[in-house]
Amino acid sequence: MTALTRRQTFALSLGAATLAALPAAAQEDAVFSTFLGGAIRGYDPVACFTEGAAVQGSRAFTSEHDGATWRFSSAENKALFDADPTAYAPQYGGYCAWAAAEGYTAPVDPEQWTIVDDKLYLNYSAEIQSRWETDIPGFIARADANWPSILD
Image 1 (cartoon, rainbow, N blue to C red):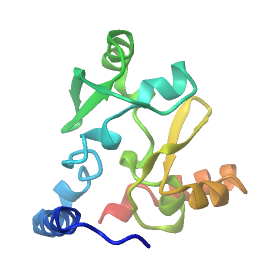
Image 2: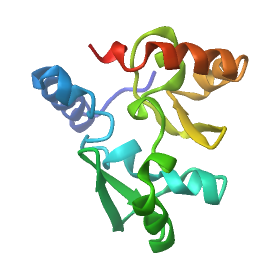
Image 3: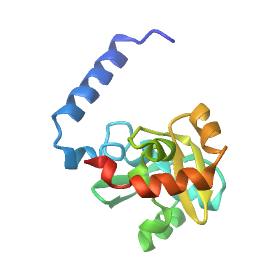
Image 4: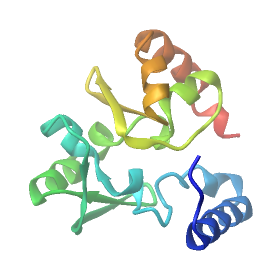
């Protein structure tokens, strides 16, 4: 584990304190609505579909959806999202799909993603992505059964 700077420690403390102070309903959107760059940490969800890559979005191309700010790498990707946000937004509120299958929520690494049946699934880390890949259909079925009751 690497040592954190004073600024990083403060930011983590501030984030935890802010999250703890939010009512449960607001915490549902916390993955999307953090100071880490908005929905899915500022990555462009459409790029997973159109470019087959995790691409950082730009402040020049943003949209508001479900109480979160979404960033896109191009005007074209923004237009695609705006036309049908549910087609591009990640499943399970942007939380880790593997964690949802296990019955809880966890943040994500936007570079750990999978598209299955035209739906975007994000995972917490490369290690969790590897676990996810051992039984994607089974994990999706379990996560679907758990969602959204795990937010309660």
